[in-house]
Image (cartoon, rainbow, N blue to C red; front, side, top):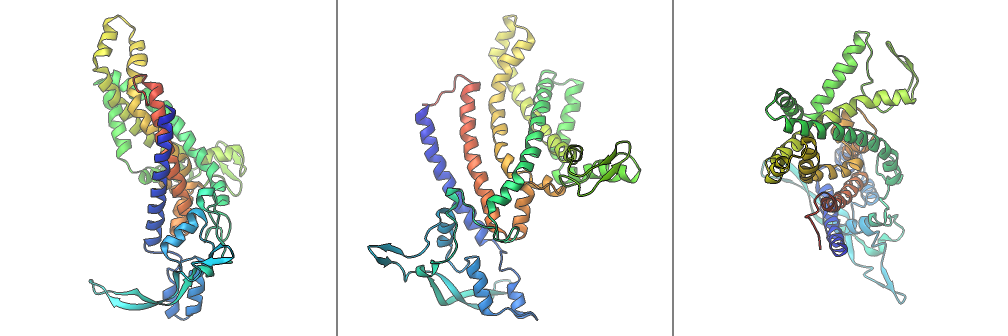
Length: 398
């Protein structure tokens, strides 16, 4: 087992590095970024000079070639020339372009595009001396935010949002397990019963309904319509109120109290719980139906064991093996959050933070979230394999 874990850890390091390269390359090569709109301003009334463009590109390190930027983001190097025995090496190595030569060309669709055709002034390795750089994301230094909290550490921004995401995702996941597993088991045991038909229909409806539509529907039904009718209502968004408010039949709710936070938590938790219960219960039902047809279950019943013991000890334990995969992979969502749900309900968690970071082209924040999520995903795969050995004694790793 220890040898297996050691091999998996080595593989995990490789997977994380590959995901880091892919994430960094895709975000930096995608359209948009901090330079968006500056070209239009350069030609408009509030003209931005070429020197301003060069200064802004240097601030965001867009004047460096992509591999150099990636290396500085990942491990914090290079920071300048390599000095050995008092001699600087590679000091005059070009690692970027401070003033690119641009030319407007017409593409295949007939639209005018600006392309870089050369470089007026290069950036050399010696020019990195004095530039501020993080220690590298591998050492837990995610750098500074570009826009959301300008020049503030990304880790501060993440730690301010992480508790809210754990609160929301943790509670909804717990409720989903407590409801989804018993419902799936009972539906499988009572196959083709009236309960099974009703449950299956509702589960299909819950799985097919988009999360954003379901969230908006919840706001309409439990917030807007009751409030307009003078009935008790639930707050439509955010994690707490900014001022006191009055709810009919309940009374005055003070901001940032336990009652206030609970009322703001209800709608997003219900939304995530119903969607998860619908999919998880269907999965456990299908897994249970497959196990209940196995010969060892028929043998257990033929031996005269009680039906409850057959279901819980013989059938459920084997049915949970594939279900563990789904549950374990909910671990990364405890950090990454639920982007759609948090955005709809304005929940100040990691999902909404990622959405805002992409919208504002705050790439250090977005890349930190993606990198940590990738690390948690590979850790979840290892936990999944280890849990398999606890559920099924036939599974052994060497």
